[in-house]
Image (tube, rainbow, N blue to C red):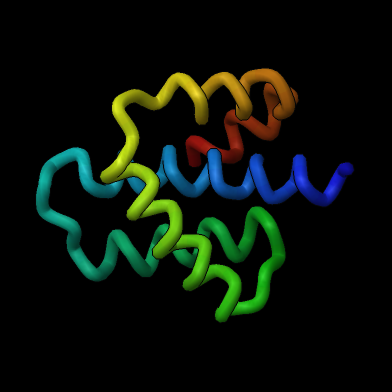
Length: 88
């Protein structure tokens, strides 16, 4: 169903952002705030849902062996403008 795909894409996007945020091994509160703002702007979710998504994404990123699962989902489902927007 489409809503399942939407949830998968939200999580994949959030995991990739979480990986960038934690790439220097020092997660600054401003980076986490920027992550929440980006996800809110991208997906139009309520604050509570964004917070839950961030927590799930951070845990998933810590537990994942690689990012292929997430990058392949974004690559398959996002058009080039959406991919660029995700990187901004």
